Image 1 (cartoon, helix red, strand yellow):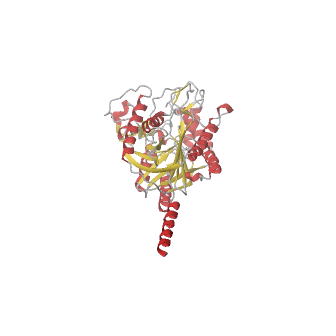
Image 2 (image 1 turned 90 degrees about the horizontal axis):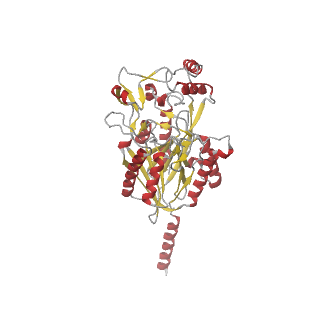
Image 3 (image 1 turned 60 degrees about the horizontal axis):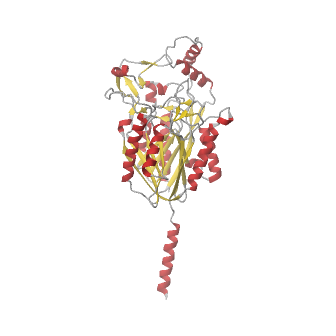
Length: 470
C-alpha cells in the first residue's frame, strides 16, 4: 500500500512544480499619432513649413514583455524628439493604472524630421502633446491587454552600405568657418567642393542591425523590434508629414510577417551618422522624393528578416531594469560669445551674414545665457532581457559612445537606444568637441564637456547591476 502512495505524492509534486513554473508573455500594438494638417513641421531651421499633406501615417509602437514577475514596456514614437516631461507624464499615468514602475518603461523617438512638436499649443484643438501622451498611455495598456504566452529570440545582422560618418576631418592646415566667427577642424556633411580638403571620417560607424523577435507559442509573430544606428534619411517633400524610413521599415516587416505583427525600429547612437558617403568614391545620385527612404528601409527589412529566419527561441528569459538620474551641468556661453551674439542680433535685417546660421546661433547663445536651471537631470536606463542588455540615453549620441557601451557591457549582446526618455541635443565626446563642427556648437550641444563619458559610465554601471542581479 505504501508504494502507490509514494507514487501519488511524487506525481502531485511534479504537477505542483509545473504549476509554479513562470510563463513568459508578450503583447504589442500600434497606435496612430498622425497630427492634424496646418501644424508647423519641425526638424529644420526657420522658416519652417506648415504641414499640408500626410504622405504616410505616424505611429507609436508598443511592446510589453512579462516574465511572470517583472514587466518591461517599450514605446517608440514617430517624432523628431520628445521632451522628458512628455514621457514622465505618460509614465506616471501608466504606473498609476498598471503598477509597472516608470524605471521599467523605455520610451523613445525615432527622429523623423517630418513631424510636429509635442509641446503644448495655445490652440486647445491642436494640443498635440496631450494627444501623444494619451496614445502612448493607451498603447501600453492595450499591449498589456494583449499579453499571451510567448517565446523570444534575438540576433544581429549587418547593413554597412547605409551608414556613413557625416563628420569629416579637414586636412592639416585647413579649417572651416563656424557661425561664431571661429574655425572648425571638422565639418558635417561636406559638399563636393570640400572633398579634396578632407582627411577622413572623424569617427566610426556601426554596420550592425539588432533584431528582437517575439512570437506566440503557436508561431504567430507578435512583434519584431530592430535597432539600427542611422539618422533619418530624408528626401521627404517639404510640406509632407512622414515617418521617414522608420515607418517604411515597419510597414515592410508587418507585410512580410503578417497580422498581427507589430514592426518597431528604435534608433541607435547616430548623432554623427547618416546615409551618405562623403569619400568621393561613390557617384552622386539624385533621388526622387521618398526613393532613398524606400531603398534604405527595403535593405534594412531584408537583412532583419534574414536574421529572423535564423533565430533560436527561448520559452522563458528573466527580465530586469534599472534607471537613474544623472546631473549634468548646462553649457554656458563665454563673455566673448555673448558679445559676438549681441553684435549679430544688432545687425540691420538686410545686412549680409558672415555665416548663413549666425542669426539662429546668436539667438541660441543668448537663450543659454539666461536659461535656468544650471543643470539637467538626464534619465539613463538599462534593461535586461535574458542575455541581452539594452541601454538608453536621452541625447543624439555619437556612435563611438554606443560602441564603448557595447564593448564593455557584461552582456553577451548589447545595443543602445538614443533619444529615449527625453531629449537634450547632441552628445559629442570631448575629443569631438575639440574638433568643432555642427554637432559641437553651443546651442546644438548644451551640456558639459565630459557628459558623454559620465553617461557611458553610468549606463555600464546599471548594466552590471542588472546583469548580476539574481
